[in-house]
Length: 503
Ligand SMILES: Cc1cc2nc3c(=O)[nH]c(=O)nc-3n(C[C@H](O)[C@H](O)[C@H](O)COP(=O)(O)OP(=O)(O)OC[C@H]3O[C@@H](n4cnc5c(N)ncnc54)[C@H](O)[C@@H]3O)c2cc1C
Image (cartoon, rainbow, N blue to C red):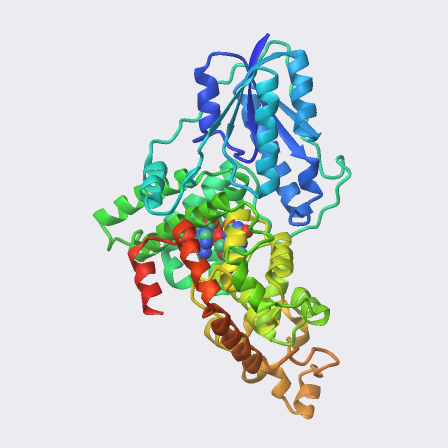
């Protein structure tokens, strides 16, 4: 019997799924396939929290597929084992999938699947599923393509899914059944497509009111940020869906911006739309350079910076034991929950790179393991940008002292996540090492016994990091490379360009 395979790489949803829509039009029975790649589970950037999240989202998708009369097969191992088995049992006409923008290993896998298809006379069809445009030579027209992509009509959710008669679905195994260990997260989101849509709706209609101002603090950001990132990375939502829902809400707000339910939303939704554009902008970088987890897009600059893996500094940074209360609170919060807002992510990375002078590959890898929403295209682009190894972005080294006072003035967030400082009052919470010995006794926090002294002098180390970065950025070879980098990766948006020329 001839069948078509819908290969779910990551787009774990029924709505706006180009691969499913295409398969349904072809009028052949469909088998859905999910292969948990053993090559992927053993990668150092992939953590058990990512796999468990994906499996939970897949389990929810599998229920939805059953309700439509469809079947889903699961394999843990190599995609070719799964394809061989299916091709023996059925006659595969086409494998239909959505394009994935991933690291080099996923490119290599897709190339091999294309070869397998050629050899077995199977058609291999891949559809774009976000704003990433394949085979672009430079960024000149990218925005035009991206905007057209995301505003295109959504693919409808199928009302049924024909499956080969007698075929049965596989149960989606648990981590334990697969012999994989996991790590529990506090406040873990609910997996699946339905929860994704309801999270987006609650943001667009309620929580997002204070987004523009609230996104910068880890306290307000927890509620006021959309929190859709883990759903986007598993593909429970497409960026196109988010764009469409946001446009619809923007239209509603425009009609009556002063009504109680709309107040505060105009500027927040504009800011949100620009973040959605950034999502695609950074993903496009990985599309052009699939080795961004290892090689800087400006390798000459990275070489000149010559950062070193000092184990003592790395461990203190990794474990949230640097002696800088706000920094430690952010790292511990992220470790416990799998999420933190953008500004604090930028601070965690920039402190590693500028203040502690640690190599971005090692620190970026650790953060990748912590983020439930790990998305290689955004992640490695941001890690490189916040570490100053692109040569086209400004040197931005975050001051922990400033972030701490701006975003946690009373120290509530610090006390919640750094219990060693639970009794320290607001006047000392940002710099507990300045307390006298009697104050340390009084507040149950003896520096170097209960809580570490700062690992380095933050102000001085940051200043040195910044000046070494400017010096390296001025090198002729680095500047020459920066021109090429800008051609391939640079934003053509006017506001960003003018900030570039202001530098
Ligand atoms: C060092 C570093 C690493 C990061 N790694 C990841 C990652 O692995 N996965 C990930 O999804 N995001 C990453 N980000 C970007 C950003 O911090 C998260 O997208 C955001 O915090 C997720 O929360 P949210 O969905 O509530 O975001 P919101 O602020 O509500 O934004 C909505 C969506 O817009 C996109 N977005 C928002 N900010 C950015 C940005 N600066 N760059 C690109 N896209 C953005 C995301 O898709 C996000 O889900 C990283 C940022 C930094 C500084």
